[in-house]
Length: 322
Image 1 (cartoon, one colour):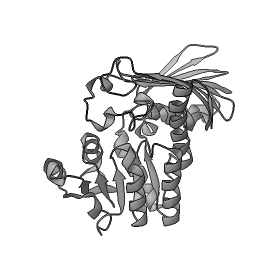
Image 2 (cartoon, rainbow, N blue to C red):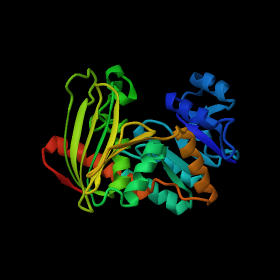
Image 3 (tube, rainbow, N blue to C red):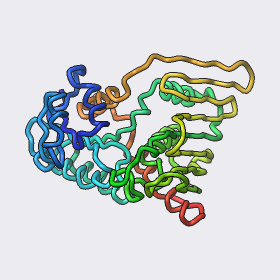
Image 4 (cartoon, one colour):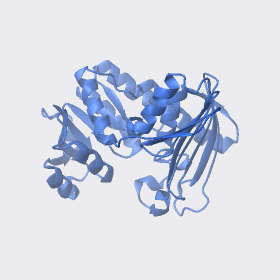
């Protein structure tokens, strides 16, 4: 049983802990860390775990791993502290806000010999897994182009003072909260991105965060791409891959459509899964040495480099080579 400490007992932490606590045979949470433990007594009571100051988590003997679900700018120092304490690390996306910080985290985890896992729950969605299987099996022929879109209204609820309501924490608008999930699946399917040309603007939000962001991508293997993530519209998730034999489209976790160049469309409905439980149990398997974690640090680092490049390109009006 892998015992995990979670840093940042907020709303997303409730989702993560609730997915496995008392349900999983391979992973459980033993403690939560917070800057203000007294404010999170309800969290501790709900899951039967103590809530303690951040700094005291790393030395606890009943902690094998640390899950980081804190503001993005805190990830680097917390991940490095966990690795230096000999704890395995699971970090919610994005791993960092710069490629340099990502490199520092990856290097420290490598030196410490601990597993570094990345919180991209969409990688565990049945429709994504089936899309990846079909592309890998050659059912699309030559992969030509891929598009990703993850948008929603959450930006409209941002209030001044919230940590997500700043450009420093959220460069390129909704990309850190939403779009990076779509980007991660695109990198997994098409390989690393080598060039970015983006635009990003604040049209309606009251806080200083962009609400409309999009970019053209070129992948190292020649595939082209388009990504968009908007912060003030209706909810949408879409990944669509185009090949010489047709296209595949994912619009939900468990529904995949295939349109061949010759023949009728096929829509497949797959069984739902708990994505958060799946990713945490995959982390436990990686720590136990029975399976590699499916999101590699090379892929996660490329995603962060793309995020940086999108913010840079949106300001300069020029493409950025990675």
